[in-house]
Image (tube, rainbow, N blue to C red):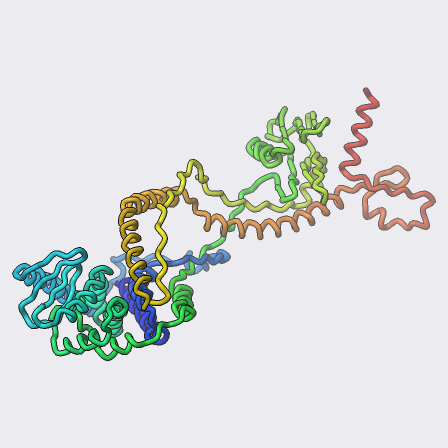
Length: 569
């Protein structure tokens, strides 16, 4: 109920916006046909835009529940007595009354339709090329409804009759009766909004301006046409669903006939509604959704950074070894982990690591022992020239245990279905060129040529109607296929932005971590004897005759070990 009321208010608000923009900017312009589409699009958009919503996600930190909630005792229905009060639902009563009035107005429209068709059944009808002429015996105002034009021929001279038929035939050709019915239906549904009645009145006046303007261009005796308008002032018609020859104030119609054509530059006024529609969407159609960040992080024995470095420890599981192989393998290099052997505690005591980068040599590190292996750093580095180096570096287990390496963020899962086997978009049929309207309307030859060209154009347009229907059906199938295959990329992109921010923080943490590793893994010697860093700092340089301090990093130990192996061979 509440959502329906909000939708109702939004629709009425948009209708008011469209009407006010017309009154302020477009009412005095002679863009009659564009105004017609402005009115119709205003009604359609007023119904659609309140249904379109955009979601904005805000990430918040998880908040622990206070202890009072943990200790609270839930109450059962037997422990609490809930007083029951019978109240009158006034909102339901008002809504029911509103719907009843709307139905009554729609029934009145239906009765007018039935009354019209009953009336023309009893009268003489004459089929013309573009319309059916109904000869009425009553002294009523000439009017048209869809393909019917109703007129009492005895009330007008031959020339006046031709003017009226030209006017009403324009209503028939351009199907203005649809506009009239749409306006009536909107008045029936939103009758409580007074602006909708002014909106419909402006629509009907604009339809008369269209018919008057085009009739004025086709006839020669323009003065007689204005006299014909005045002649039918006293006649009224009781069917509000029809296009009446006398529909709006005659004074306004005659003034519009003599108003200079608006300059094309004034078409910018149609764009004045756009900022208001954008403001409406930003203010009322964006829903903010708060989501709590996940605080749990899966425990793992290795950490992978954006610069392809990771620590393999004695406790790394087989599943994590497979993940390491995937992480450090692509088109340029491939990591293979084999010959893994564990002790009873599940610790790795034997392992072989191989880095194949496609070059003439490969990086190999193999360890065999009865004791758990030392921690091994796997890395892939690239310099500014995009030269890639990959390899391994041993790290003491004590060092690896002392320095806590950061946990990597988990990348979001991309959409599961890519755009594969997508059908080709249908090609629309070729439209005929619209003939140019003569610059001089008084040039009869040019106007006759233009009319012939327009007849040919309309025939060509009718001939491609089957192709257009076929194209529209294909487009419906194509759009359904696009929607079916379209992944939820918006959500994925938002998750990727968050992931990239986490990766930046993770990279900085990895820089600090690697420095700590280097600092902690350094070994110091004085006179050939291994000492701690604290002993080196305490020793005064001027009191020692020969002090040889050497910093030995993990890569240097590996090279020394390689040389020892070669010598033994």
